[in-house]
Length: 116
Image (cartoon, rainbow, N blue to C red):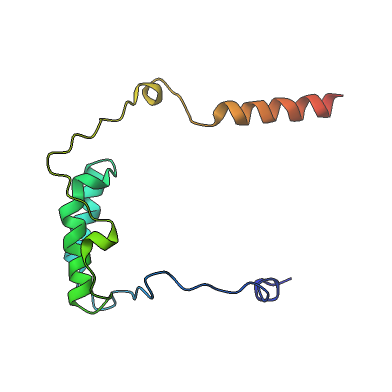
């Protein structure tokens, strides 16, 4: 059965803020590249790149790629003076993988079932 036939009963819902057109003209290419580089350099901790995110969204608004809106309505916050706890990575450094105990338990249960 193809995907079109399966999804005929599902009604699509539009995004809350309307459409978000692609930047075909690359009007905001520098802003998005700066923001993405900042995220990579900061282990994807977004609050460290808040100013670059604001620049990118402002660029999109000024180029008609999204509706003009106050940035505070888009979840932008002022992080100046806010202390954010550094993430503890001791478990990961020791080889911990989130969810692996669950996967191991499932495999063990499957093996018990197969051997019974």
